[in-house]
Amino acid sequence: MKDTKRNCWLLTVLSAVLMSLPWLVAGTSLLMLVAWVPLLWAEKMAAKAGIRRFWPWHYTAFVLWNALTTFWIWNATAGGAVFAILANALQMSLIFGLFRLGKKRLGGVLPYLLLAAAWIAWERWYLTSAQISWPWLVLGNAFAKDIRLIQWYEYTGVLGGSLWVWACNLGIFGLLSALAEGRWTRWNGKARAAASAALALLLLGPIAASEYRYASYNETTDPLPVVIAQPNIDPYNKFGGWSQSRQNALLEEQIRTALKDRSDSSALLVLAPETFTWDITVNEIDSSATFRRFRRLMARYPGANLIFGAATKEYLYGAEKPSHTALSVGKGVWQESHNSALVVDGSGRRDIFHKSKLVVGVEMIPYPAVFTKLDALIGRMMGMGGVMGRDIGQPEIACLDVVGGGRAIPVGCAVCYESVYGEYCTGYVRKGAQLLTVITNDAWWGNTPGYRQHLTYSSLRAIETRRDIARCGNTGISALIDQRGRILERSPWWEEAVLTGQVNLNTEETFFVRHGDMTGRISVLVFLLLALLLCVRLLLPQFEFPSKNR
Image (cartoon, rainbow, N blue to C red; front, side, top):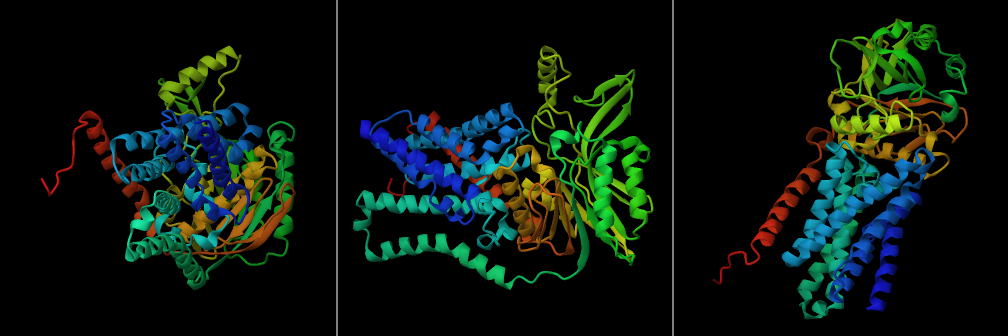
């Protein structure tokens, strides 16, 4: 028993390391296809040895995986990091516990199918419905650094990668189990050949299909010039150390230098980072000194459009509180906050979009009907108005138009965290976006893997939608990404920089854009059917499927 427990710990740590490496080291993503095998084998050993409580092992594996890959959250919020690591690992552990329960009541491969379906269904819930949502470690994200392997995401989205991970891990585990238990030798030659061929197809088929698609894909050639300004302002000085006027002057100088030789009036996109300014009121945009300054700057360059981020506020009037998170700023006057993206050109035309996928705790209060009261209580105890952000997102996705040269080009602007949500980003394309942009401020995390991981997720969105992506980070990494997901140009980290280049516009829709996350939906259905069967077996232990021999 002692040796079994020691071996279980070794296998648990091995699984955690294998799961973590794809997020940390480029070129290691294929390890995810075997990363679950050690943990599944440890569970098999524990069950055979009669160890009833396996949760210390699987919870440890998930805590280690979360900690090794997302430890950098600590730099932005220590409490948030601890909560994210422990709570996310707990949810993973509950799914594994359901699998363990399934092994007691379901036979054969059904518990393993339940594990895979439940996991992908949970990932889909994270990506679509959950207000407390942290989908950073969706299994399909493991291949973000190796985009030649996953060009088929244009059909399946990132959860297709999760399905690939489960299919390969369960296939390899099943084959190893057959070898260890002597079942392999009892199979005839055809059965062994079929099993080997099926596993080889699972492992190599998607890679071959992706390589073919990578080589054969023809990118559209409808260029739009782009200028990306990376001002490199330390976010811990941004809202106190530097005046907004000083920040505006820095960005303006970058743009002027980049556009000094511009002579035509064709459409051009200039991109600035998330939350660049804080002095914009949605009700009175023209009263903002920053907005007026940018409008005058764009007037010097006909056809140029500036998209920039802003921490905005909006005033609402009425006797009743308009939302759970609105703050009273006077009798009958309420203030709501947003994390916004704005577009402006020299004509004074403007538009605004409010970020919808908000970071829990830092930007928004989840389930506000409940947690606003708790937040207010904690705030009073700490002598503050509250400890969680109160931003409100836009209820419906929308594009921002880049206008010039006699045409208007719809552009989808994902604000920071929104770029992690694949099916959400397809909404921009369904609204007509011919190009995707990402504006972000990743410097809160410091020089850690966090900002590099976030950059690679933009490559996933490019493949899923077959849209070029222009990405602007306050401190980096800013980049131009093509429709294959290749990073064509990138800025250095923590330096002032300007990228100039062009992106190709595209009006075609991928299968994933048109039909959404079919993999996730089917997984939810399979999970519900297996969960129903498990409930029947738990409530009616004697229940058996009808047999033809009876």
